[in-house]
Image (cartoon, rainbow, N blue to C red; front, side, top):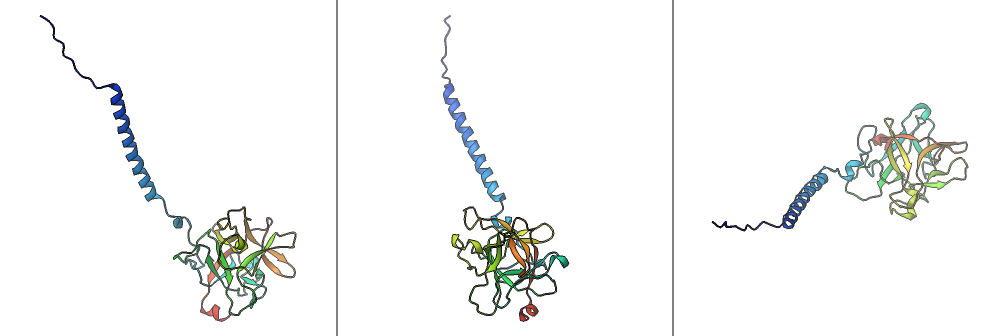
Amino acid sequence: MQASWHCFSYPRTENISQKHQITMKSTLLVWFSFLLFAFVLSVPSIEAYTEPVLDMQGEELKAGTEYIITSAIWGPGGGDVSATNKTCPDDVIQYSLDQLQGLPVTFSPASSSEDDVIRVSTDLNIKFSIKKACDHSSVWKIQKSSNSEVQWFVTTGGEEGNPGVDTLTNWFKIEKAGTLGYKLVFCPEDICHCGVLCRDIGIYFENNRGRILSLSDKLSPFLVLFKKVGPLISSSI
């Protein structure tokens, strides 16, 4: 009896491999899309990373609201921040006595936003609140010092707003300083990516001008708190 042979058609190995690769790629693409979606949902916004600055009452600092900057260390640490001329502010100083009333300031962030909360590590203008017109602005800025012991000191006459290369000296930041409070910093690296100076603001004692807010490698950071100005304080200035 003659044996009969039946021919079967087997799929080619290379076709199976191609289909397997396509399936694997599709599966990986689905998983990648899922992980990317989950990552986007889990990443906090930039705003969440920059916590609000709080005043002495635990309330958020607000742009345009008046505050007095005071030393976080009372007694030997000195008192409030003021100016060499409270009517038309000149150099920015700190009172040596904590019984003296400082000069109120307002804060204005560089970036425009509907959120008026002042946040840590954001560039802002600091401006003395005065009720008399002067021949120069009361916006803080840094100025080169002729004193060999300090590189720069903080004075007034800066331009409000208009962030850019022409206004680099006018921008400051508020940074956390551990549990003691905050510190003022000059570091406008987000205003201009051009190798800017970055220093904490400290206090330099000068015989004829007193305790001047200054920038120097030799000075410790000036640790500060913020007192919201109330009706009694406003009416007395």
